Amino acid sequence: MFTAPSYAIFTDLATGWVCAPGRRTITAMIAVADPAGRRAHDAYHRFVRDGAWSMHRLWQALTGHLVARFAPTGVVELACDDTLLHHQGRNVEGAGTFRDAVRSTLGRVVYARGLNLVVITLTVHPPWGGCPIAVPVNARVHRKHDATTTIDHARQMLTEIAGWLPDRNLHLSADGAYATLARDLPAGVQLTCRMRRDAALYEAPPPRTGKRGRPRTKGDRLPTPTHLSTTVPARSWTSVQVHVRATTVTKLVHVVDVLWYRVNKTSLVRLVIVRDPDGNQPDDYFFTTDLTATPAEVISRYADRWAIEICFRDVKQDLGAHNPQSWKRQGPERAAALSLWLHAATWCWYLDTHPHGQTWTPRPWYRTKTTPSFLDALAALRRTLWSQRITAMSRSGNDDRKTTEAPLDTLAHAA
Image 1 (cartoon, rainbow, N blue to C red):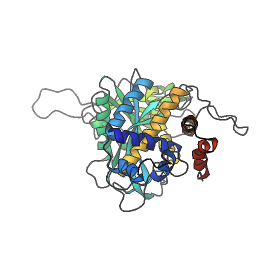
Image 2: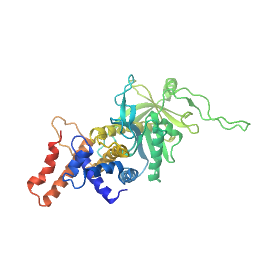
Image 3: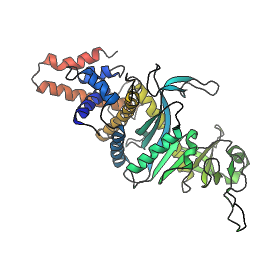
Image 4: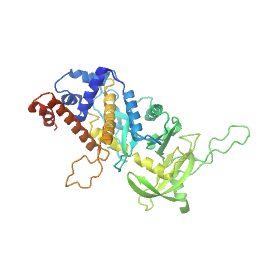
């Protein structure tokens, strides 16, 4: 996936990205990874913008390793969502004005300029327990007024991942905006999603009568999910124990297989109505294309989807995904994808080298911390990389002043 010169630049750039303090601009990465100026600074900019390497194959290699390591058997659990990386300026390739989901509310929609990324992640359950981790395995930029919608991007990426894992079954969890993926899923892929409260539902089409004319494609009309949940008798609700982000909760559920004609005209989906036994929360409505899934599996899969939101926060805040100042041609999309790729690679390294976590320094004001965050994994990786660099400087015969010069210079500009 790289030429020899491109691979050398990639390793330097990845190291600089992880170790750079402050904003992750390309020049800041160069200052950390190549302080002696072994190669021209514009070589790093050209690598991101026009370099002879393949992000597609980079995703493929990482996905194969992640699945073999963390999901060697069973169904491969995936999640999908889109996010906005803020970029100002009219000349940023691929950028546009999109709804900012973080700052928008029910009563006020906020728009911002940036890259709209559609991302698919692998759900990993860490050995130390706690909430699952979402590690990116594919990403694409959705451009404004592009004929390819976010749904199409997600479907194309699912097809790619299914091709990389030909012998595995995949299960994707997504929010309600991706419900129409159920219309044309790749072979071996199932979907769990939130259902609209006003969805038009039908019974399965009746059997053919043998009479002349076009056979019926849908059965009798059913109530909407909201109306259906109010008419279900009390004896039809079932109590189940559900694992929701490392916590076991009790829910009341009602399951019915329906035809959501607008989403999929030919196949039934399983509607799961979820009710809080205490009545503190409104009813939730989920559906899955997997007609063998239990209600507990459907609820847990959708709850685990929240990990992708944590992934987006970590990539933006801790890896500075919107910081690299690469504006032309492939630069913006590649830089955004590399930040997501580094997030997955960092977690992969941390889970292998620190399977029990506990790499942070205990603080007397925070005694309840039991599981590591992405920032803890990033800090552990930084310590390892700096230790290797300092050791290499010492073995080269440099004096103590030169050995400590690089890390001290980096820390001096940490603010």
